[in-house]
Length: 223
Image (cartoon, rainbow, N blue to C red):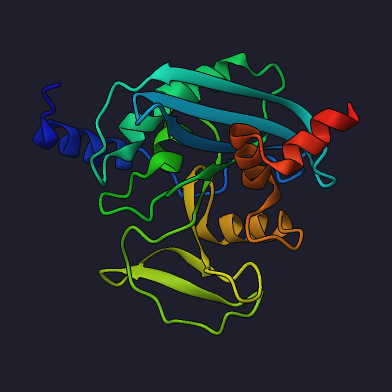
């Protein structure tokens, strides 16, 4: 597979210019979504899960899992090109679309300000938030591992997101605006979705669905 990184870098820079970090959605959220992407069969199959939940009680409304042949290699900084085809496939199956989407991955907390949450937000033309479990770029002041602690994530003196201690004695989350949402609102909505676990409910459910974890098995058993 021939990959032209210079062309992809230019594409990211051009797309990043279209990203909006201004709130552009109805704050009366009724449905909220989460995504999770993983890889199966030694990376040859991309698995994407999307779930729609009610807000604020987080009841599952609808979910879909898409499995597609992986069409892009693993290249750090360009993961959105690897992940978005399966995410779009899962999204197209959703009948009840969420008002706001929390994406497992980076938003603008990316060297070229185009992580998967921003890229997907542009493709779907909807508000997205990046909820990443690890840092891709930037610096921050290390905080005590106490739930609720927040510190800015900075890169070249620009705030690109937040480092949120979502649960005591756990590694922090890296929160960043994806598209059509401000950094302040991105942090607010992630906090609104925390229910005592490290991950906010939308991405926690998406992860459980994608990997058939106990949370999802219990939900299926109760149906």
